Length: 68
Image (cartoon, rainbow, N blue to C red; front, side):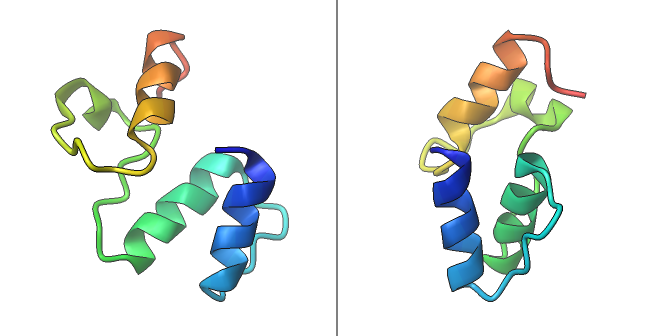
């Protein structure tokens, strides 16, 4: 999902995305939806959330060594 689409989704939820990074916005959305805010974290190595909207992007970050 493109950054602008993520921002639009967040703004629709009442989240102010000013100066927020993609990872922070997605984690904020996850918390607002009462989900674990795991996007972009080491948890991806054990992720079993097959229905997660962010899963493929998160896995891709891990494959490129970007996960903290």
